[in-house]
Image (cartoon, rainbow over all chains, first blue to last red; front, side, top):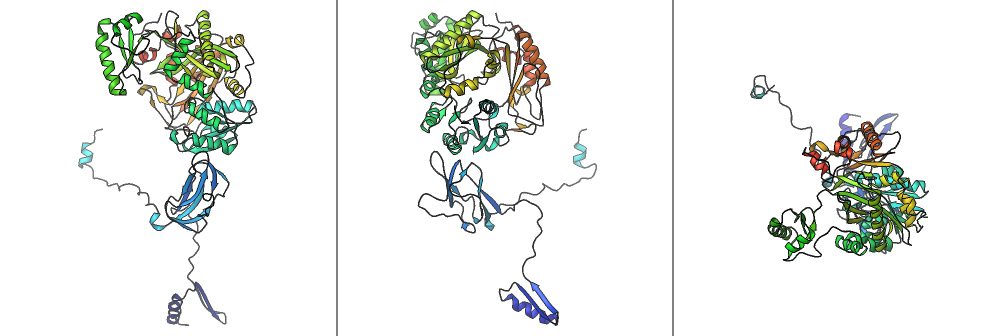
Length: 157
Length: 453
């Protein structure tokens, strides 16, 4: 097969939802894949796009007020401020709210479970616009000055 | 007896209560704020619950958070420690309403004794001496009132606090001007210009009596604690017995404290604070309706465990000993409050990471603390990080033991008041026992100092 023919096949494949394609005649042919290569983990920290939803107080966790439907399930999109559960202790029940917009990735709690302040109840994958800015880089570049410049002359030893 | 107690406090006092619980085979529940995750009380307790953020309003002062933790862990009683909610009658009531035993007196006693004016009235009724002063608020006849009380007098704002509206008058001819100034100051600070007069005590000592009452007639008063070494009303060193208290004064003080506890219908442990004058007369100041920071001094002197006593009384037991046992003075004891503060820079707080700790040991040495190497002193709370309490057969040996133990005590990473304590212990006037509550301020300001008679 000529290289041009292969380009034609690949252009065609782009118009479909195929992810992988293999073509062989008598043990010869080609294959390609649009699946991204599995990335090797660089470090064990969660990505910047993952946010914990901390528990607002001590008590018993419930999905919602009695008689209301569970709102937070894995894979569901939530917006900042959405109700994800409530914590019932002494005093008024406390609302567990999404700290930012995103998709619920992990649910670490179940109804009826005793929970404490600050305990992660959910992890959400943040929506692109909710990802915090990168921390500022390592400061300003250092510029060296020639000996005898103003800085050097002013220095008092 | 309780099976499980929640300790609504932090730091060394939480550790102290956990230790008592363990010895009594009671399970302990620690509560902690996010800033106290590393604290020793969290590690030592059988269970620990994070109840809120660093600032105490959302954690150690939150009724809901603490009561929720008690419910979640099925605790039966709450020990409030000192500070935070320990003298809050509403919290005491909230515990009761939630079906929990509050380890302390009843809410009514906390309320009555918590209000200074009401506590004074109660003391007067019980025949406990109070500082001579104008019978009520001061009117236009202030000159006659002052003459009755005798100069020097202190002019005080009724709504007072923080030294505002406070005027010392030594000379009768200054009185009118000072009364006017105090009124103006009180008006500006508290929107209330009512003032009253009190006799000014030139060389006061702060001496207090620990009491324990079982609510069914058993009331005992322990030997006194002398807390005269203070800096800006903050106690630094406490000792028992006091170098200024004779057996006769002690007995009168103990009788007065018991009379007041009886009149207040008090139960559980508490402390009656007095001002002691150089002539041996003493005057009621206030009642602390809780365990005191300096309670170990009394524990060493008497050989008793006051937290154990507190828990037993709260559980409804009667006092198993009488006044004779409570009066026993077995040793001389001195407590040093070690704060994370820089004594060289007007005792500014010095929070931070503790790199190394070496605790003193040996005979007659006790250390109550929640710190360890690698612990970070948070900046949210008071700066007390350890208490060193020594005991010896007499005062001289206790001082020598204190100097020795302070020398062994090494804390690296934060500034502490350890060197300051050594300075006090080696001071001539401290050794002679001839000082008053102004001793530390005079020492720090390098003022000329004379022994107090």
